[in-house]
Length: 140
Image (cartoon, rainbow, N blue to C red):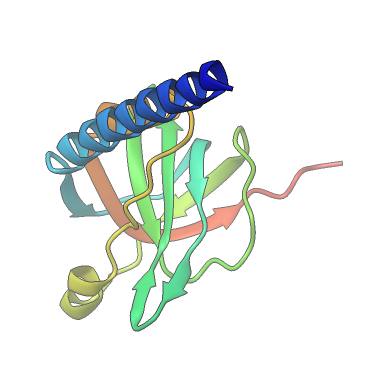
């Protein structure tokens, strides 16, 4: 019985340390991001997707981390897309002007992923772009 309590306590402490560490890592990486308007359409591969949602009076846009054809990793915000996107999907990112009010209130939700490797993607991002996304239709 005592051994079970020690094991559970140890797991909780280890888990709390892990989440605290991951939370700090994601927060530090996000603080370095530069937000920009997307200038040209481009085809990318999805590495991470978080669907848009509302929480109370706050509205969070779709947030993606993607790989460009030039092998750059960028993040992207979309306010209109209403579907799911699977990791590995090819999508088109298109320019779409967001007004200043949208840019100030529609920031990506602060989400820490369960896998440290996925949180590492946040640290590979330097630029976050505003725009619109479109799925690429599979040809048959």
